[in-house]
Structures are given as structure tokens and as C-alpha cells.
Image (cartoon, rainbow, N blue to C red; front, side, top):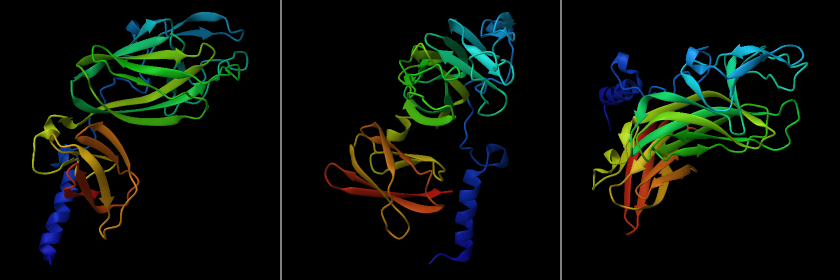
Length: 297
């Protein structure tokens, strides 16, 4: 049985690991690599052509410049600020931003791009989060709309789901960069009759880790981050993970969502778990089990 001092030491160690760097710990929240992903900043002289200001008859008065750090790639994406469009006279929904006042709208073949604050690095794991809602042009759109996020030179394209609700929908995905990329583009894909509102884009490099970094130990499970809040990554070097089980402190199996990144690396969603210690058990192809534990905070 551990002495009280040992228990206190373990608790303080876990607490320090959860603190931001400026307090002596390591941060689990990496820098957002998408500049002005909430589209609040603007206008910038390089982003002309994002939106035409309209009068009460929906006639163009002048060009409103787009968001800072973004430029037009194709056609004319729209940066909207609540109240800019006289929606009583026009077909625009003129909805509420997910947060703040500004958001963007992309319809078919409209595109804008931005230079990432740090390039995507090949074989590195990234987390991508964003909010989308449907621009129906006040009910004129009849088909769901969709967009794509594209990274240059890297081969990564993240296609959104078909959006058919005017409420903001939150999306969260993890991907492995297939190449080095410096820019990210947003493209309106389909259909011609509708659009997608975009707000609060976040792209973070997950814990500075690559697939190779977590596959360099032959004898035990590599699990990170630990402690964890929303996701953990489990890897075994060159060993196929055939089955993974998560158990609580009394040995009860916990239902979890697993996403396979490679044959020997998986992502596990632990966001809904209660705080505490959990046991991860991995079964190999030869039937052998290897276990480790992590702290959910």
C-alpha cells in the first residue's frame, strides 16, 4: 500500500503534466496553425473580392475586403459580418456567427486560401476542428452542401459531411500528413444552389509527434498523451494491433470509439470518460496481451 506522501507525489506529478508550459508543465493545447481561423480580423489589402456590400435593393455598392491572412483562389467567397446584409430584401440567410461576429460562406467553385503559421510535416499527426452550417439563401437551396479543405503538395484533402441544417455543426478529425504543406484552401464542392458557412477552424500539431516517434519501442505500448483529456494514441512498433480493450479501475470494459491510423497505431476517443485511471489492453495477432494505463483528467 502506498504511503500518503507517495500518493501526494503522484497527484502533483499528474497535475504538473496538465499545466501550461509557463507554469512548468507541458501544454496539451498546441498552437492553431490556421491564421484568423475565426475570420474576425479584417479587412486586409490582399483579400479583396470576398464580398460585395449590398443596398436595400440587393445592388452592389462597393467591395468589402476579406479576412486578414486569406486570399481568393476561385470566384468570390464571402466574408459576412452580422448585420452587413439587409436580409429582409435579399436572399442571404444573414445568420449568427458560431462565435464573435464574422464567418465565411463558400458556394460551388468558390475558394480561398491561407498560409499556415507552420508547415505541415510529413507523417506527423494533426488534429483538425471546425464548425459548419448550411447557407440556404432563405430557403431557396434544396440540396445539402459540402466543402473541402485542401493542403498543397501534401495530398491531404478533408471533405466535409453534407450540411443540411442551419445550426452550427462541430467537426473533429485526426489525420496523418502525407506530405509537407504550407497552405490550406477551402473549396465549395456542391451543389450550385446552396452554400456552407465556415467558422472557427483549428489545426494543431498533436503533441509534436510523428508516426515514427511512437513506433520506436519493440517491447511495450506507446500511449500519449498521458494524462489525457479527449484523445489518446496507442502504438506498437511493427506489431499489428488486432484488438484493443479499455477497462476502468475495477476491470469493467468501457465502450470506446477507435480509429485506426496505421496497422500499428490507433486513436481512441476518451472525451466522455469520467476522471480517473484506466487500463488499456492490446491483443496482438499471436494472441498475446500487453497492457498499460493512463489518467483521464
